[in-house]
Amino acid sequence: MANEKSTLDDIVHNSFNDNVDLKSLDSDALVLAQMGYTQQMRRNYTWFSLLGVGFSLTNSWWGISAALITGINSGGPVQIIYGLLFFALISTCVGISLAELASAFPNAGGQYFWANELAPKRYANFASYLTGWFAWAGSIFTSASVALGTASAAVGCWQLSHPDFVILPWHVWVAYLVINVFAFVWNCYAKWLPVIAQISISTSLISFFVIMVTVPAKAPTHQDAKFVFANFVNNTGWSANGIAFIVGLINTNYAFACLDCATHLAEEINRPEKMVPIAIMGTVAIGFVTSWFFSIAQFFSISNLTDLQTTPTLVPILALFDQALGSKAGAIVLESLVIATGIWCLVASHTWQSRLCWSFARDRGLPFSNFLSHVDPRVDVPLRAHFVSCFIVTLLGLLYLGSYTAFNSMVTACIVLLYVSYAIPVICLLIKGRENIRHGPFWLGPLGLFANIVLLLWTCFTIVMYSFPPAKPVTAGNMNYVSAVYGVVVLIIVVDWVVRGKRGYRGQTLRHEEAEANLTAQ
Image (cartoon, helix red, strand yellow):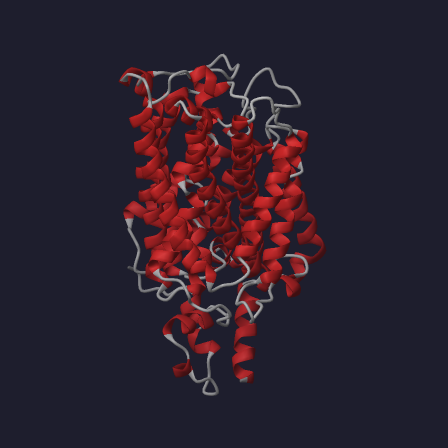
């Protein structure tokens, strides 16, 4: 490791003087103070509850079940089985890249904070500002996609038990609102959240086990190994199977999205430089094991793949349960486990998006930052940031009223925007030099460099290839509108930067100066 210290190390002696009692701060709060922040949140999380939040949000096996229709139309079992193996490797590289930076710079701002510390000084504020907006926008679209997937499952259960019922977009939207409000309420009191996280990961793992065992055990027939491991299906309309396969990768990629979640809880756990990497890498490991074995078990249990693709419930996994069990009641019971897992996933997503909004706002990265950066001492939660984020998620649900493909567009937007938010600080790290920063306890040297390169290459790939429409011929109803989403997000960022952000953003230099002034005043 090089002896050169990072910017954070350089300000330690400059930011504190004899008027400050450093002994009054514990080691975690001291590190945070050196970064220019005061401890506002209680450190309520344990390593297990932090892992619970991280895994509950990513919830790989649930992600596969929620977005199954894209996968089975764009490659069938082959797409998902081998896609999961591929993404386990990609996500390991993404996880390593995030874990190294989270270990070196444990801060609730996560990737936008890292970009600000690592970028060349001239570009640091704008790089950080871009990263913060992309990360927050990605979290918003993630919450919307989780709420929509869970709402679709709930309405699908009703349709299965009422065969004459025809699902309309507004039915799903109403369920979407109810589920979104439910998740909002559970995030309004900080002491609940660690317990909820433990309940959530337990619920997910128990549900996974019950479904994985029950469906193959009850299925009247089973597919052979060729169907599961060699059956390629192309119902996308794309003449090239390769393009169809790439379009379907969104499904398996969704199963490993949002790996930065734990980094935004770094100020709510002791020893975050060690605990956050454990949560990130643990999420990848558990996610692969559960999603891969879940997928294999379900595909062996399919009786008729066409019925899954054309089910009136619009929920292929529910149709699969019905096929396997031969009982609508039994299928609904199993789907209820999926719905419960999805609801807890949305609770974790709300926790994540509110922390992103709050931390970015305290550096004046968002309009009305003074309002959004407030932490309510009665509940120890950034309640205003939480409410605003959830309100935006509510509005995004209206997109589904215009297009059934809104879910796919939201999934794509959340994946790509988050990858870009990961890539920017990694680019800054490589420009600065991996050996020119103080490393945290989690640092993998050459393997970390390899992971960084894989992350950057994959980000470039997703920006281009995930913008393709999921099916042909392209119509207004099946179009991939993610390019329009990118345009709107970039337009908002540019306008806000020019009007307000360029002058008001609390970047590296200003943050250090304010920290020194505040500490001197004490």
